[in-house]
Length: 113
Length: 110
Image (cartoon, rainbow over the protein chains, first blue to last red):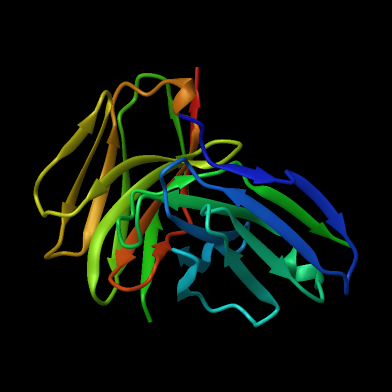
């Protein structure tokens, strides 16, 4: 069974731009969660989607948004990029919301210059 | 404030040593404790613990949860260089997502 895939793997953007990251969960998984990982803050939860609905949201500004499609694929968007948004963005899938045996994708490394 | 604290932050051992990694948590509506291993890429799932006092084992790795004292430990016996990684623990809070600790960086030298 294929694992979680994320595209692109690496991205360089400049301040003020916006970016869209994509995540395809493991086949059959309906919950997708997004995390930001930085050396200083570690792994921090952004939001979770289940059945195309945002179920939970972390403590991030409104510039961070996401959505989930009917095939469970999810996208995350960051608008008006700031230098501090440079991070590894990880998505994780699980069978259902609340069943937290989550499986992570390889991540997208975003660098904001 | 909900939090998960891991210790030590980093650890250097020799091959063959046994290590114990610690994770304490203060999380309201706690449901389970998870351990992940992260090398140069995505975290990989190790264990999920929901009941106190029941050890989970996978090869040389084992973990146990103490819900009274609010902590968990991850043991690795007969360490190998391939065990070098960041070990993350996370608490699942009901109705929300995983709250991660900052991780323990383990380096195993040959």
